[in-house]
Length: 444
Image (tube, rainbow, N blue to C red; front, side, top):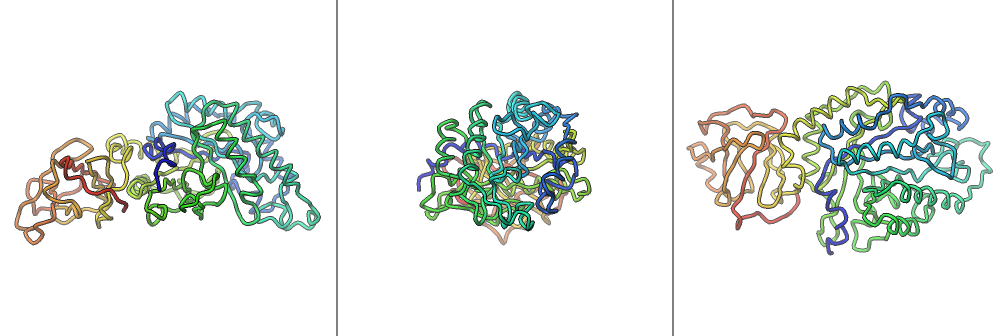
């Protein structure tokens, strides 16, 4: 299968690392964006959150500065989540930031600030809307009133809901300039492509935003792949697979082996929206190695922050993002524009590759020299550290005599000595290959 159908995602596959931002009235109770569903909160009882969502400290330029410092090349904001509250100026409902007392188009401000930083922009849009009267209530899989007998006779008007959904997507695609990503969420049993009017919706989007890329959730969810990985993709299959809260065991491919773009969306703690009691933060080192794992498997990482109701990103999140950015400042060439090396997964870490350059991401220190398994010894032109350019030597000492076909690189003057890695999180070794000796492209 031709890779041409993935051509519009070339920039996405180059940039590799993005910021996800979940923000809305659910930040007021501070128990996550699924609060209404998980706790069966009636619409009227959620109004205090809508009224209390003030965005008093919202400064999108501060957010954009943080994303730039983190090395994140694109950002996706929740224009509307499942609660139906809109962060944008819509003519189709008054349930949004223009009418709850904020009086601001938060999406417009986000887009302006991030574009000014040269960061590509995307908007998340929930296909679900728990506030809309024509969305299924009783018996639905996730609606807050799914178990409420008072709604047992509720009859949703899906034609009316499709018109509403389509109208809001049209507003986003018409009123906010060029969008780089539309991130739809999500399909489930009983509510899928037919209910969304997915074919017509995508046709409209492609007319209004021909270069925008979309995820695969018009026909699936975070646990699925959809028809994008088949040899018969639907018109609404999207441009990338979107695994959630997991790094895939391997990359995705069509039946004929064509790599399929993908992006793992992951939280920095364990929740998307602001959750005051969640202090289970992932470490910067863990997220650096997971970003590298994504790239080594041909994917992207979309790392989430959940600002509080005033619009402040938690200091624990900001500190971690800046530390990731510090590592990328020194080692970014092994991530941006890089992908799978086709050499398998070595026991000490991962390989990534860009053209005729390989990158060995050394996560575990060796005893003695490091074996560059899978790399032909006679293909190597030069070996150096990415962070400072220091040239490294191939080990030719007695300690590697039993492995004549495997190149070993040493991290100090004596080949059989063990030296501490320069970077305890991920020491990146650049392996420049001779032009006529590039390993065959593949996937780890």
